[in-house]
Amino acid sequence: QKFYPISVAEKQVCWIRATVRGPAGHGSLPARGGAMAKLAGLLQKLDKKRLPVHITPTARLMFRTIASALGGINGLIVGQLLNPYLTNIVLNILGQRGIVFDPLLHNTVNATGLHGSDKTNVVPGEVSVDLDGRLLPGFKPDDMIAELRRIIGQDVELEVLHFDPGPSEPDMGLFDKLAGILREFDPAGNPLPLLLSGTSDARFFTRLGIQTYGYLPMPLP
Image (cartoon, rainbow, N blue to C red; front, side, top):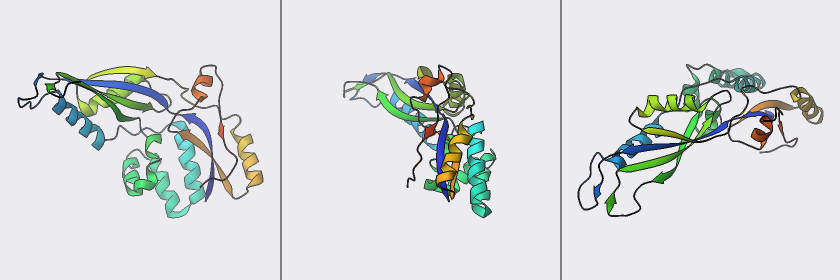
């Protein structure tokens, strides 16, 4: 099957700094259970666990379109991504093929920067990790922090560094027009409403009340 994605929504940037503390000291003395060890535990928890499943209106439209076009057992499997009790199971079954779907069904964070001692022989009493957080449409930084707390606990300080808000639901007013053009030039293609896992300049137009459409009328691999 051939799908032509038309981006109608995207995730929101929500950068967070997580800070842990412990006893400081000199590098010549053993330091166990300190800030570095706590940070290692925090990163392992984030690596092993997904944040909760959320089915947004755009994701629902997107996966229903894919499932309908595929049909059969493949369509049935893809359709189960919209069942919150089965979403993660299906993603695990899909493996690398499903990796692009994962962030469309969860808020996500990735550790991208570390801050600790600037001296090799000093055990820091405080270390921080910057988390590149991405929120689904309709969610706020407080939602991200609450979901993180359930995984990493209460002993970690969380600070929101930056948040780019977007609309909770897209305006689909021009979608049918764009989809019709695609069908006219490629009747075998399936226009698809897309929730973008990244961000684009659409977030700036959003603040002016303008709906944007990511539209590329050409076949891609």
